[in-house]
Length: 174
Ligand SMILES: Nc1ncnc2c1ncn2[C@@H]1O[C@H](COP(=O)(O)OP(=O)(O)OP(=O)(O)O)[C@@H](O)[C@H]1O
Ligand SMILES: [Mg+2]
Image 1 (cartoon, rainbow, N blue to C red):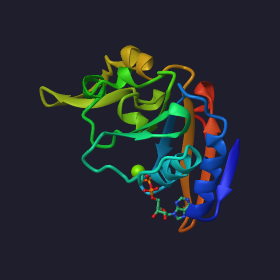
Image 2: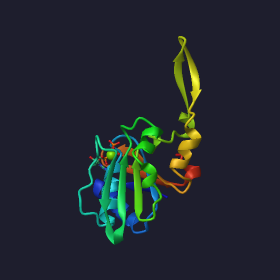
Image 3: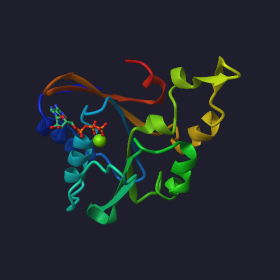
């Protein structure tokens, strides 16, 4: 499913509608450029889930846990500054992800699960550039299970964003 929104309020509305379908245990991965509307979407989710606190973009905090309706919690991860999958595990990600009363939403999921095309990196060794495969790849797969809902955010112009809901197989395609 793909939607174009024309304002941040529309993006929040879309998220608020989407929140109605959530019952707990979902893992939602929001990926896309800086400023493309991921945190804005989380604010809409929070509204749909009756979260009372303000949802902000946590610059130095990786996880914000919010109380939501019906005994649910919204776990808002922002992995922009995380060093890698190990740190994600160290902060106790597995205590939250997929737990039945917790809805997990993750900004910058790419930081812990490189997409297929970035699964190799260049590294300097003895003055030469070599291709290195990510060793963590198989293990990080388990951090974000195949049930993860992937939502892509694209900046179209100042107030327009393209928001695409994808499943595991579609997420590397545009
Ligand atoms: N249609 C739209 N949807 C969402 N945000 C919009 C839209 N139009 C304009 N904006 C503005 O774009 C900015 C989006 O910022 P936001 O923090 O949500 O992005 P982000 O993807 O979380 O960025 P980051 O990668 O830095 O975390 C806000 O200032 C918001 O007001
Ligand atoms: Mg953000």
